[in-house]
Image (cartoon, rainbow, N blue to C red; front, side, top):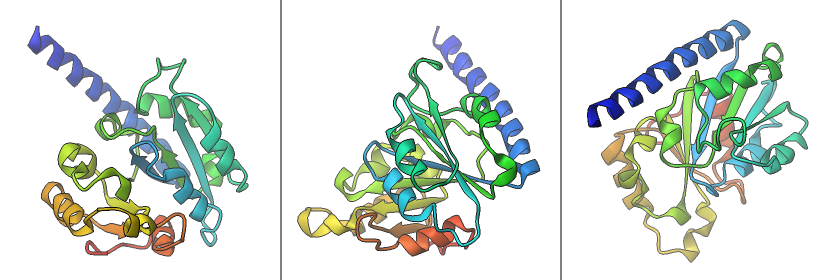
Length: 224
């Protein structure tokens, strides 16, 4: 029975990767750079996008907003006058806690890919499942807020290990917290040595310009 379960998981991931490859081909044909934006619920993904998405200096950006239910985040981003497509996993996909390649593929007809240079896929807030499913993205960005504790890279290593950039958000709250940034960075390097990282605050704007430049394709040093 155990072997059967493992085989089912392997088959599901293989099928997902096949669809992700098809998504990637469609994105490439349209010339769109795709970023998979991930975090725990409440880490600040949407607010960080609000800070940068409407002002990317000539880069035409759009958002695919993933949630289990509702459109609150999509409504916030739509006020910035950028193309936003809502993708809910409930009821159409059973209320999944992540976006997978097939879900993203189902939304492609609603995305104006030919009019975009950059597509940000804001994944469902979760520190486990989104890391397991490629969706055809070029890069993955993980948001970790200082309110979550220094141990998150050790508890959820796959999420941190599979990302290309880590945004450490809400640093404006550090004076009010017993939080050790150096311990977090040490734990981050333990699971993903040298991964680029940025200290940011969606509230005050600290680090936001570097985040904007990264979205525009400017490389980030590993020790940023």
